[in-house]
Length: 77
Image 1 (cartoon, helix red, strand yellow):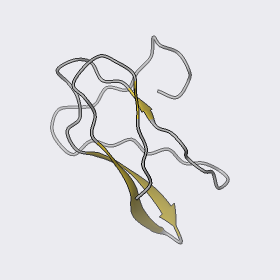
Image 2 (cartoon, helix red, strand yellow):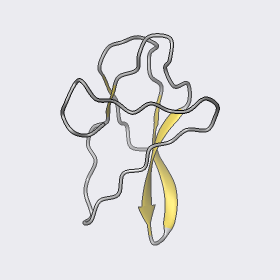
Image 3 (cartoon, one colour):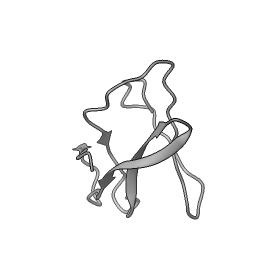
Image 4 (cartoon, rainbow, N blue to C red):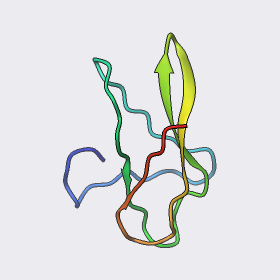
């Protein structure tokens, strides 16, 4: 999923909710989120959260298109 290889991907199980959690060993600044769904399998309600002082906070909502194209999206709320 984050290995820069177009031949690998993350596949979810059926049902909601589904999520991906990425943990960094040091604080980072996220400037972009690149996502690509298979056509017909796009997420409908997606967001990015950041954890600070043990609490998660939504920092961006993402509304992906239902196509097989690379999408770049991140607007910090």
